[in-house]
Image (cartoon, rainbow, N blue to C red; front, side, top):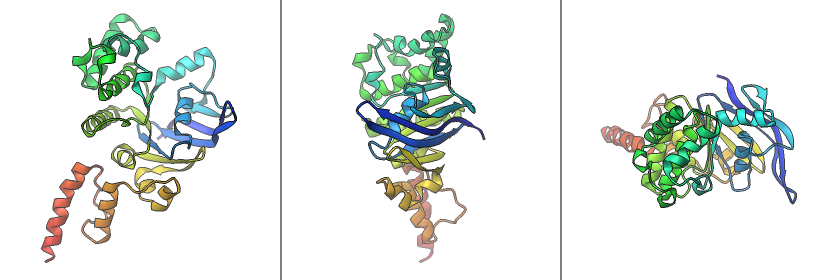
Amino acid sequence: MTDILTAEDLHFTFPGGVSALKGLSLSIRRGRTLAILGPNGSGKSTLLLHLNGTLRPHQGKLLRDGKPVEYSRRGLQALRERVALVMQDPEDQLFAATVFEDVSFGPMNLGVKEAEVNQRVEAALQALSITDLADRPTHYLSGGQMKRVAIAGAVAMRPDVLILDEPNAGLDEAAETQLLALLQALTTSGMTLCLSTHDVDLAWSLADDVALFRAGRAVRQGPARTILSDSDALAEVGLSRPIVLEAALRAREIGLVPQDTPLPRNREQLHHEMSTWSAALGSRG
């Protein structure tokens, strides 16, 4: 499986001498979901702004499909056609009068013909389950609706990679559940996802791969099962194992779950499995 985006030894310092990236290297594999975990100030958001060309590294390079990104106007346009970014606060991205107009902005800016723009917008609104919001003023949306509209705007650009900065920030449980289902549907369609988050449970539910950030570097990267099972590695970045994974691993340690049984990835799966484990425990007398 090939890397669709690769960061090699990235260094970046903000004005005032604040060093955000300090030799950071990372790979995003095509067709998979990468979750980036780490404390505030570890470089997560700064890296995401590099991945779509908003920021340019002071040292190191970004590769797309193995080729260095060109920071010319044409090169950046080519990158942003394929890599879409949804920021943490959707209000920072919504500016058109209505939802339909906002979602259509990206494709129109790419020079897509009007008929195809309309098709893309309708498909994106349907994919995000917000067709009923098409004519609604963006300033009348709830936080969860704004988040979905911002994602719809990115999806309408038909990117290869969708990047999300703290996608569940500010959402209640119901809105987060809806968002997770929508993101899982996008991965099923073949889209590559990269998301930053503090939420290890979200990472366990959604991610194929995980990278741990600390002090401007990626200190660990690998399969989600490997990284999120490693309590010591997680502790180094101030995190603990996901609750669902912790419960499943404990059940495996005491022999309730066979070693080759797939581990549950969310609470619904865990609740279902717990009934099986309880029955197994009861049969032991």
